[in-house]
Figure 1 (spheres, one colour):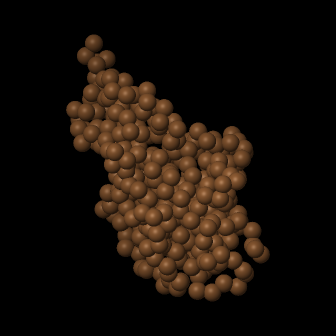
Figure 2: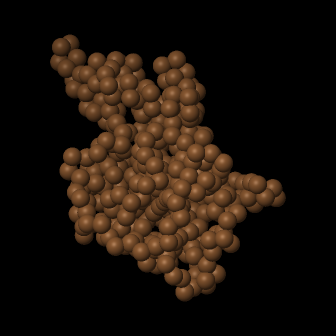
Figure 3: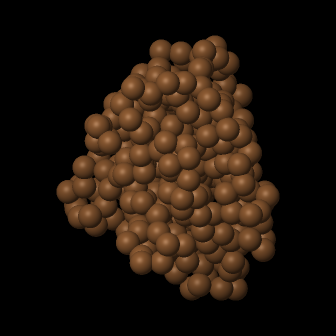
Amino acid sequence: MKNNYKIILVFSLIFLSVLSYKLSAKKIKSDKVLPEPRLQYNFYNDIDYKNSPLKLDIYQPKSRNKGKSPVVIFVHGGAWDKGDKSMIRKNFREYILQELLENEFTVISIDYTLLDQNTHLEKPLEDTKDAIKWVSKNAEKYNLDINNMGIWGGSAGAHIALLTAYNQKNGNSSDAELQYPNLKYVVDFYAPTNLNDLFKTDANGLLLSLFKIYSPKKFQTRHEKMIQLTGFDINTQKEEVVKKNAEYSPINYVSKSTVPTLIFHGTEDSVVSIVQSQQLEEALKTHKVPYKFYTVENAKHTFGNLDLAEAKDVSKKTVDFIKSHTTYGN
């Protein structure tokens, strides 16, 4: 009997190690300081896109020789409750920005409403769509090619980007206020794609009790994060949480009409398991959606431990994918 109990305990602790993903924006100790690339661009910053404190920044190439500029929307990460549009200028992302500018893309980095216990995921999703609508309305002013627009994000921002790209339901509305151009692709860096799996909402009472005892802070973070995302309490409203988590899981929207998708994930990601990207890959394969999936050896969450060569390689692969889904000559 004692041996059985020990076996159960061991497996429970293994399970809890999976359950304890933090979904935090905590900086990795092994972060490497990369040399700043020499960026040249026209910069339009702190533009109000929806009559609110939320702003966006426009990074535009100094000169363009091919007509209007294709557009990439950037959605920052930060566990849905931290971060801002300036994160595009940090770490490997700055190299992607540089290469996009060199290839005459306009990059637009947006702020969105951050989550708290009273503000839930529908708000940043709405903000992201509003930013896209603003781009459409102001395309002539900034010489933008809105027929060649995609979206890129990291972590929580990639989760928002995926949901936005996979749910383009009102792009053909006759109401000018609802219209926004269809996104042609999505770039996903280490996104949560299956929230019920990420948060282990099917965990039984014993496992959750052990989790609460051995990792009380992580247990509380899990609880608070699900309230932020869904507006419901997993302890008393589990059915509603599970339903909302499914609604907010990009893998549940993959179909044969899903836009081409680029995925990056590090093999040493202890915040969002690489399994999340593998599950998305399986869904894309099943529906024969064009995609590329790059695993980055030894990379941690946020890719803060990439060296210069790795950062440049990631940048090149990202921009090559974007260019392959861009139609020139507009």
